[in-house]
Image (cartoon, rainbow, N blue to C red; front, side, top):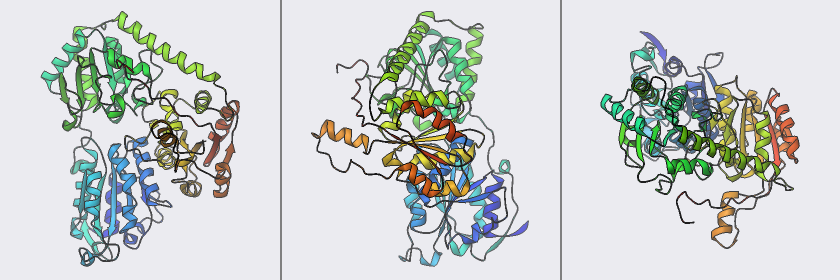
Length: 560
């Protein structure tokens, strides 16, 4: 056993788990931790300009890299500022370890300065939230945190450590390898009987569809999912927000579902007689939990790592708790025994390919949409000309950015990042910065509106200081588009709080020390993005666009 300062023990515990970046801001309650970092290159403290930005970046880093990250913040508002970003990590299954340096124990429950019940605040948006009560238990509590964060459906964990347990304190401990205190590389297989039942349903299906969820990305099962689809000519549809679960250029792929997705995908879901929901809880964005999307007669085989999600939103014919990759491989073994050469389904395959062509024709027609300023739909075909196949794209909340769901193609897992059902406007810039830190070998862009960009634009300073070459594309329509559309449609155009006056974002970028661009013509977008991707630092491309209020799309099978 070695004698270590308490702050040193925390840093060594994080590094043992492969944590490369700690995101946050310094504070008086955490100086005993962060001052252990100067001179180290194996683990770095990335200081942001606001704690919310730190949490968003940690989320982007973990989702891009597949590795855990950490946030360290000080007492009171310093930690409370993390709430929005950590709620995204919770919704988005990101293993972010939050270490909050709290006030000393003698001030807790006495309404001391910056004393709040942080554990209770973070409990609803983390997998685990607890307070360390002894210096000697710090390594044990870190092990406990990582076990929870990295097991099953991954997610954030909150550790509250009162400063009197850190400041000037030492403990005897050894740095242990993760495999000594948690299961590493374990995959949960599906029940053998359920596998046989699922295989029997799939082998008899006339209109099978594979709904590819985020669990496919998490378990690196994209190739297995595609192999299953090819074996039985299953239509490929990603669950909402997970377009990168399967390659979008595949002949069986017909686009993403949901209000911002393709009507063709919704039509296929409605027509399917068997749906293999692989690694998905069948989220609200995919189907609106509406039987006009999922036919009541459709048999659903649902696979999810979280037992609470099985049958939660739709009744299932077969439900399995398991890792998406492990279950996919089990199904492949059983189905190959029955169909060594595959089971062709030419009629359904032809229908799938027809829907895919229909979608391409619809999107190609948008290339001719006129307008000055340009309509936002005109941006995406130009982006498609220049973005590398493995480019990481972060899509902020908002109408104009949301058009990317049906208009950009993703071929590689861990290249699409969004608000994961959390809906936090302004996450685009910071999450994008995190993705670039997580995978510096890949190009990275963020797409956001003018409203969302100003939520966190101060982190341009962080991007410049750290030299993070993210390309931020700001689609500026001078309004909060989703809310203005609702006020137009439902409130007789009684507009309030939705019209914006913003600075020139290219000039704002230059003030911060980043590269700024201003693009008014569609034909200039590709060259501008190409130049921005070649920069060694951050850049901002402002594109003025027209207001666009999308019509409410009818659901398949509805009378509207």
